[in-house]
Length: 176
Image (cartoon, rainbow, N blue to C red; front, side):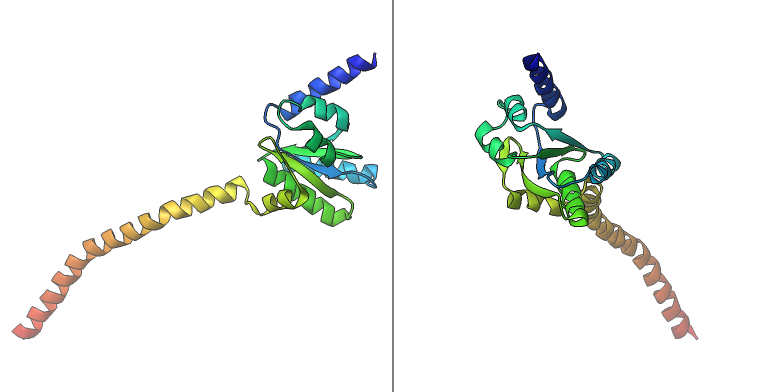
């Protein structure tokens, strides 16, 4: 019976984390049920998922994608995985913000592109802007030269008219 349950849990982990798991592993020790419910609510609002896991079963589920021994070190003890949404940066921001708020959610590490990351490496993902900000930055980089071309074109179109007007005023002054 236990083997069938474990096999079902392993399949569920594989289904949720997919072929390329990118997640943040956090320590859930000391977090109350109310706080964890709040974490899940915040995660849902940001399009991120939180999954409390059993270390040995996650290692089995991800053995093809990640080195199990390294993963076991990251997931030692009561752990939860934060994943999904717009990728690892969104998960890291959620973990960091909630950790500041409660003082109890510690980042243990993570996995990115099948590499196990230490907490310091995971923290670097927090500084990556979200998708909307990145798109706005790319658009502004693309639009900047176009704005310059537009200003140049406008000045070329208005310059002959201004030149003709100045020439007409000069002729009026010389004629008078």
